[in-house]
Image 1: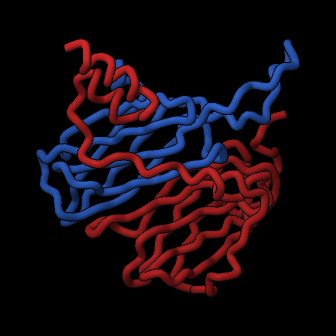
Image 2 (image 1 turned 180 degrees about the vertical axis):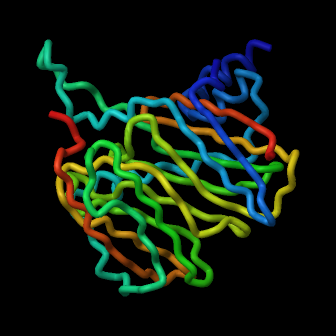
Length: 105
Length: 147
């Protein structure tokens, strides 16, 4: 179940692994109002991202609510090989966390 | 047995690590650093301590068709760049994202952000404790913060 919120493509070209990830998450700022009820939609957004490959951290990021809904992330790192593992974990302001792991292609 | 269960229940508040352990997902190697609430809640942007640099590239559209989804890519070849912070100057809380690069990771990050109105996107690079900045104006026709 946890895997479904995170789509990852991790591809090695030359020495560099390029990661492209798409995460399903509302990224609510807490500023919007529900048009029908008039109530404020509470803030609900990813605060932290952690990426590891072969047990080593390759990125850590902190986000605010200004990152778009269903956020996209791309970055590059070296020192890994095809077939190595890559894992992305996110954690949001409600304390929820999910991760997904793929093999580098 | 009971002790361990109680311990896990109590540590639920600890967030990611506890959830991962109880779900049987491989124990994460590192723990999440505490989210910098003060920085992300700040209503003004203070980048006066950073010096302007032409070695920081900000790729973003000149005009954003949709302020809710503005693609931004920041990269730099400043030696020793350890992190990039992205600010959306005119947003209510300007600090938008911070990317930290361990050794071996390129100083490059791409994501999509919400912009309330036409504003500068400011990128601040931390390299060896010194800060460098660059900015790019993005015009927004339809604001992206809803309401």
